[in-house]
Amino acid sequence: MIRLNEVNIGRHIEEIGKIGRIGNTSNSGFERLGWSDAESAAIDYISQKALEYGLKVSL
Image 1 (spheres, rainbow, N blue to C red):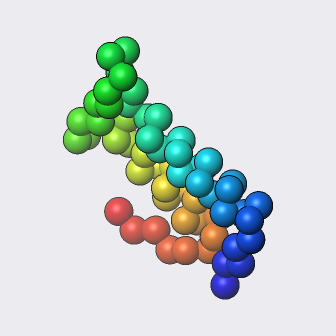
Image 2 (cartoon, helix red, strand yellow):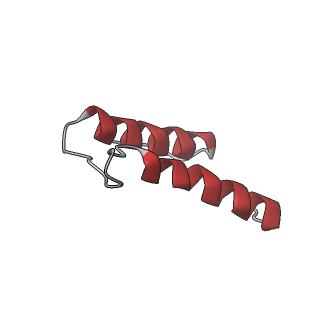
């Protein structure tokens, strides 16, 4: 079981915020095309976090 407290919640929000920064463009937008490096980076990030919590990842 994952236990959350104020410190953990803040850390998780910051970590999840990293996904939002993947694929930033110079005009304040986002570009995360399917099968792109940015999409792969987002999938890898979420997969790694899931594994760290002992979850099974299947793609």
